[in-house]
Amino acid sequence: MASKLSLVYFFVLIGLTLFINNVIAHDYDNYINVYELRKGNLSVKITNYGATVLSVIHADKTGKLDDLVLGYPTIDGYKTDSTYFGGLIGRVANRIGGAKFTLGGVEYTLPANDHGNTLHGGKIGFSDVIWDVISYQSNRHLSLHYHSKDGEQGFPGTLDVYVTYIINGPNGFAIKMQATPVDKPTPVNLASHTYWNLAGHGSGDILSHNIQLFASKITPVNEKLIPTGKIVPVEGTPYDFLESRSIGSKFKELSDGYDINYVVDQVANRHLHKVAMVKESKSGRKMELWSNQPGVQFYTSNMLNDTQGKDGAIYHRYGGLCLETQGFPDSVNHPNFPSQIVNPGEKYLHIMVYRITAQ
Image (cartoon, rainbow, N blue to C red):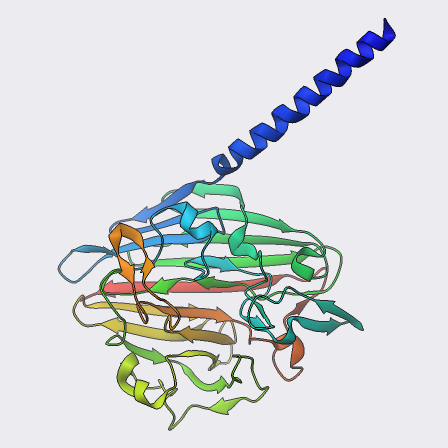
């Protein structure tokens, strides 16, 4: 009798295990949702897959609504992409040279997913995982959380990460990124990787957009886009956007478009610093960006190549611009750069504030 009961329990256990695995396999996508924040004519849509910004809709000077960020037609596109459209990047955004760094006398080896270097957190970064929804109010905010385990993508220590998208009026929204190490010091450098086109996401290139960057220096890079460790002034170079000018006005002086970290000019006793101002003449739109981070990666989507986008759009090279406020790239291997190491008991805080108007 006992052996028969044991056999029954065995088959029940097997059946339950198969059932649970089946539910997990089929319900994985059920945890992925889209959330909209709206005030007036401003609408921002975000998915908890990768804490990704899917769309930002705003009116032009005539009142016509356009989606201003590049993206894919379905969530599935974000699961296989290499563009990082709208993603929340981490544990360390941008590049780490040689896919390794030393901390506390220990060398950590990371996934080499970019010509021998680590890009945007490794092969499975924060833009490739499902985040938990903490709170959501459609006219206020969306708060998400991700628990990153010790050793994930080679990084030391457990890390709790939070991001809150806040809509603060018909012309503005903000992103607040926080991270708290649980048990070990670890590098943290989060970034929002949104591609902008103020004329509308499918309207062509952004070379005629005018941009002003409140940054008088850059961190130059080698042929693999790894910083050399130098910090040099932009004055008199094609990287000089201290005065507003069109993005494409000095392209002939470059080997490609822009993909470089700018050192944001800091103003004493200010928590947030003005990073950039972008204008597009046909729509009349203007976007201002403020942040508390020391750097901003200005990227002109040089690697876009006939990418299938939303609403049947095809995104070509230079179809969008990215302004990724951040710590300096490869800071873990350059002691002269601002440190990205956060210790247990400390908190990483990264704030971005956008203001979009049209006239």
